[in-house]
Image 1 (cartoon, rainbow, N blue to C red):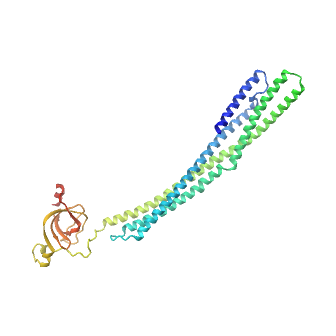
Image 2 (image 1 turned 90 degrees about the horizontal axis):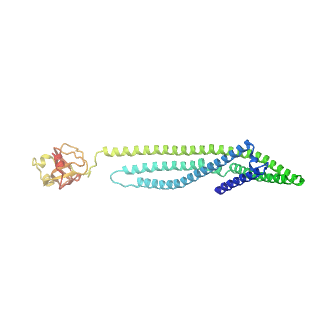
Image 3 (image 1 turned 45 degrees about the vertical axis):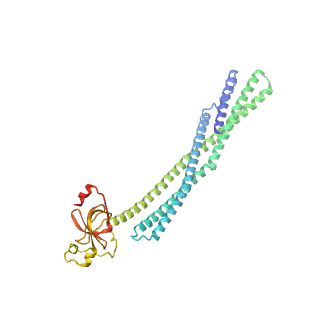
Amino acid sequence: MEAIRKQASKLREQVARQQQAVMKQFGGGYGADGVFADEAEAQQHSKLEKLYISTRAAKHFQRDIVRGVEGYIVTGSKQVEIGNKLCEDGKKYGTENTCTSGSTLSKAALSFAKARSMMEKERGNLLKALGTQVAEPLRAMVMGAPLEDARHLAQRYDRMRQEAEAQAIEVSKRQMKLREASGNSDMVARLEAAESKLQELKSNMGVLGKEAVAAMTAVEAQQQRLTLQRLIALVESERNYHQKVLQVLDQLEREMVFERQRIEGAPPPVVESSMPPPPAYEEVNGIFMRNTVAELVETVEYFLAEAIQSYRAESDTELNLSAGDYIVVRKVSNNGWAEGECRGKAGWFPYDYIEKRERVLASKVAQVF
């Protein structure tokens, strides 16, 4: 519709210029441009056209912001729903976990659920702020009376201007007819009436133009000010949201990293709390040998094994192991212990901490000795 209106306006101007040229050719005293001989009137018309274009563009931009914010609120609400479900799952696992090796993951799950709940609450606050502080004020202005009233004034001024153009052409025609038939009192009266109507239209058009310019100027200023304020509010709301979420995530990360460091720094758990101590070195090697010890120790051929988890020795007869170490195993007892050599040291260690290896790189074998 806007394109059609512009095209119609251009056609009217072309017709008016052609008519003006014809009237001037025959000596007419009025042309279409005679209506706008006043420079101030021409400037007022030009300013009003620019204001109309400016306020229309600002209105479309405001409408685009409203649509974007409303779409963000819809998708954000769905994200809040998903996040809260994830929070409930984490809380459920944290309270119902029955892991036998510790409660570390349970604590992490509860911490995660708490942090997620706080983040989703902040997201909800953000969505509410975007709705009340951005979308609603802009929507009210797009649909508001001041803008529509100002645009109606501008449209009335445009219609009156077109009517004045047509009346100016009518006056020119009557002037031509009067020159062709001079002395006709009836034609003189009609010409005077046409000229009077033209002057009245010009006067009303001037007043209406000033009102339209004032109204459109006020609306333009309000659009610029309000839209900028709402954009600033949008940025501040998102900035505050991200800052608070970052604080929550920083705290959660610190808690989880601390728990991980605590686990990694703690001594490895004993495979069996009731596991008997390893046989004494003297007993295994035949010094003060007892039958019970002989029964416990099984003679095996030497083999290579890899430590699958670390072990910290608790006595001088035991051997420290790190995950990935290679050991020459020399003896295996029936009570869960094995004896071997690693990195030039010999001693006992839990048999469950190692796995037998058939093939080992030469570089790894060198580490054993």
